[in-house]
Length: 401
Image (cartoon, rainbow, N blue to C red; front, side):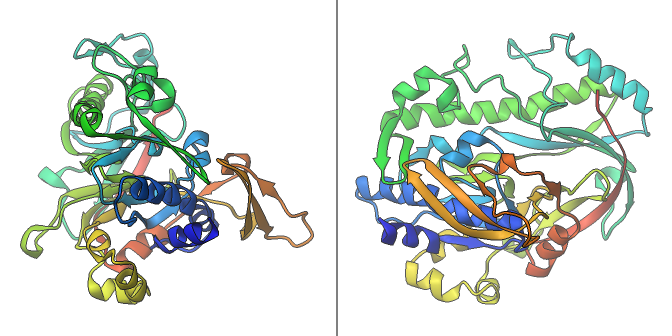
């Protein structure tokens, strides 16, 4: 069992900033990877699942996802005709829109409050207002510069971070996308028990039916963000509408807190992607570049491991960008060890930043105070050549209720 966990640990490739958020991510990810490897072995597939952490690799504050052994801020990829429900891809993303002028904060705030009673519908489904929960937000920004103009020459943009709860459970639309919220989805899933806990997969006809449904949910969430924006603003032009938490490219490539894209054609430009670090720092539109080339893998110290594990094809095909700053924990220096109490039961013994403080032990990072990272995420992205910030924006205000 320890050998399999170490094998999974070797399949974790971190391109993060190397702080405490990244350390917690790297400590938890091997448990989820070990589960996926166990699935592959059970299906007669050579175990090759990888996690590639983006510059903002950090923890997931979703207690269920964390408990199943998954991190945040990166891409999971594996070989095999199955998908992993425990990753909980929920089609969350960001819409960037161009505005003709800077709207008054009080007007937009009043419309945000009115959303709770507006009964907006899309495809016969009532849209819930999730813009004031968790880390969702609407930032209104002014373009301040960059190496490119904003699309259409826009000077005022907004960024809307939203996912929606409408399809986590079973609806007339389909069986739902969260295994722990949908009995019909659980009934379709195959549960595989591993030494590190259970894992739920869809394969065969269940996968063939569900993945097109998931893609419809993802498209719904794109249009959902556009409908919410149309309610908040008199007029806007969509600029970017991208998913950073989903099965965007395939049922066996899951971007969880990162954008992922196909290779730029012929070495040309990719689409633009938003990067919002914190309410007090500039936001950016980023143009992705080819990721994890041979030279980049060498620079990251991955070359020998990638070749030995036979995962060059998986790693080199992952083109990712950070989606935000991610969480960091100044009160700790790192993770001393992981204590396994049983399947899906782990505690993390931390190293306190102040040696006079008792050594903390946690089950989930949600127990820890956190802050958002700063410019180090953008700087790491550009230093590695993963992408370039081409439009810079100052956040004029954050819309809250």
